[in-house]
Image (cartoon, rainbow, N blue to C red):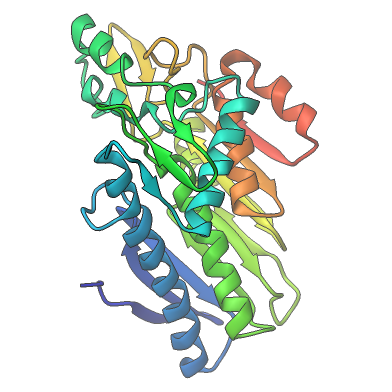
Amino acid sequence: MNEPILLQRKTDVWTGRFRAMAGPCEILIDTDDRATAEAVARKAADEAWRVERKFSRYRDDSVVHRINQCPPEGVEVDEETGRLLDFAQRLWEMSEGKFDVTSGVLRRAWTFDGSDRLPAPETLHDALRHVGWDRVNWTGRSIRLDPGMEIDLGGIGKEFAVDRAAASIEAAHPGAGALVNFGGDLMCIGKRRDEAPWRVGVEALAEAAGDAGQRIDLSGGAIATSGDAHRFLLKDDVRYSHILDPSTGWPVPDAPRAVTVAAGSCVQAGMIATLAMLQGSAAKAFLRQQGVPFWVADG
């Protein structure tokens, strides 16, 4: 059962808060009318919960769960799922295999809880045997995995949910001014009544840089952040990020602590931020080539 939405008046906007995708979500609605605010917040929450139900690997009624059961005949998927799998393949190709939705099985070896526990070599070796998008049989209509393999769409799912929630609101409430924020990935909808930008704080950047005052003014489009503010290991003064290289199973060396990117959609921003993290020490050079605004907190 979905959790309730908490709707509160905050200065000149309404704020709707709820939980989805294992984290806090909120939407700011620039209106004086409570009924409008309730309707817009409900649209955002319903779409977030729909995406979570459909694509979460933690639910046994999701399409990802069906795929991960590895039936020998494969699983035929709907158009929306197909688009996400096509996107996952494109990211794998663009990153030369560094972004791989089959690499989620590496969690069997790694637990990024801030401790100093590194994985046993044999555990990591066993997990790596089940990684590799090039071993996935994806036809554009159906997908089949080898036994022991899994897909995990968590690396693109939250940004996809932000974009879908924004589109749902724009279709139902054209002209509404709002800011969708799912766990720090954000997108603007419409314009504020006074034409002012939304001033947003990026927690991952602020924590990584030790700057509680990190703020970004956003008047349109989206921003997404990739970073290791809460998911890392620390052993012998070496910090191990949760950003893993699927070819080795180990954290990408010399990756920034956090990368935030602004783009036209949240999926696009998230794609660029994640690909930048996977570049390690070359992250800034990669970002400069993309022609988008970005912010980096170095390790």
